[in-house]
Amino acid sequence: MITGRIGVGGILIQCSQNIFKLSCSAVINETGKVTTLAVPWSDYSTHYTFLFEEAVINLLQFCKNQAKTAAFFSVSFHQVNSIMKRAVQRGLEKREIDQTPVAIGLDEKSFRLGHDYITVLSDIENARVLEAEHGRTIEATKTLIDKTFTAQQLLQIEVVVSDMWDAYLKVAKEKMPAAKKVIDRFHLINYLNQAIDKTRKQELKTEQELLKKSKYVMLKNEENLNEKQRQQFEAINKANLTHIAVKLPSTVKFQSL
Image 1: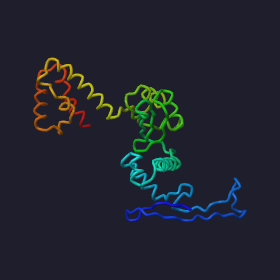
Image 2: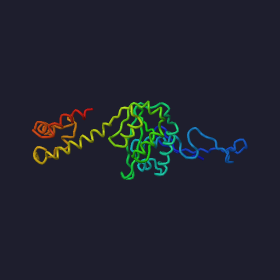
Image 3: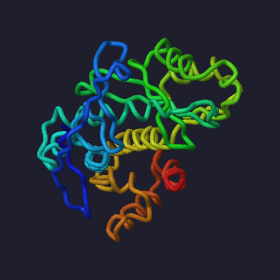
Image 4: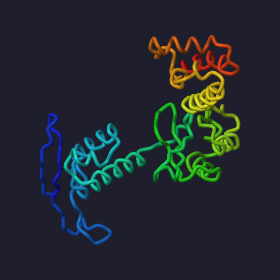
């Protein structure tokens, strides 16, 4: 029997269905067991309808929290985790990389409280993950590329997007020498913001009154400044500072990219 939950008009209802088993010799499988009839709305081994699993996955994508999703649907964390793993497996089985992506991305994701990393390979244009590999070393990145693409496919990739992590840049240059190497916008802005704040701290030693509480004034997009912040921004920009006067105009233009 399958007991599952399905959504009807936004309301969750409980349903049960007896699944018949065929015991005649014609339907004995290779393991010697009888065959269970399949139904189109569920996998008999999971005890959940596909519609219920879809609702769980949709909420997971929205809140990105398995415990809260389990509480919302009155199921256990383990059940939500199993549904998530099955959804990932179904996606992997349907994945096709016969058509080589024009642009790929290499990015790191931390887990275990930031003490460990995986490298994620993605198809930029179609916004999908192609593969992942534990670690962010040169060896891990090479393994990731080699198990995803053939040598012929690597020649067809036109753009490789990554951060400035040395392993990614080296492997991209080695494996896809003809492809354009692009540093992603998020990391560029992050590095630029760090440089601006470092420069601000240097100037703060001699211009404390002018630069006091100015960190976020200098890091914000100009259009997001309130009137008080705008006045402070203009005062800093007009001041005869050694470093910041040169960097402020380029920063504003860069953040609009």
